[in-house]
Amino acid sequence: MKKEELLEQIKGAMKARDKVRLSILRQVNQGVKQIEVDNRRDATEADVTAVVKKLQKVIAEELDGLRKAGTESHADRIAELTEQAEILDQLLPEQLAGDKLERVADDVIEKLGASSKRDMGKVMGELTKITNGNLDKRAAAAYVGKKLS
Image 1 (tube, one colour):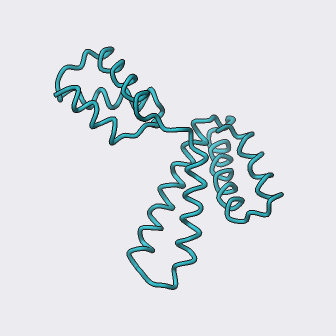
Image 2 (cartoon, helix red, strand yellow):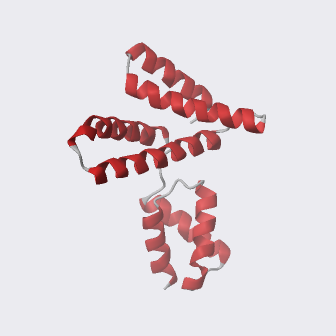
């Protein structure tokens, strides 16, 4: 997602008066602005994706902690965090999975000349680099492991 698209979504959430969506989009925008200030450059799509993934991780950790606490008093916060996590999922580019993932993995295996399980780390690293981390890592590891056995 580009920064311009993010700003358009913020405007849409404001018009729709969707407080939860607006809140999480503003958090993403703040992270993007911080990157621009820190690095003194315009944010790229990769920067926006990195901010979204970082927020996903923070929300997942907080959700995990609240669920472990298990008290009824946290039900509202858990619902809000769950909704925010769903919104963040929608902001990420589509993850590579299924046949497309297998084709890319086969190309990487062929390109690297991988032939044994020892090469699995190289293959997974290259797959992650090619897809910018937008892949189903479990499925990729299972498929690559099966191909290299």
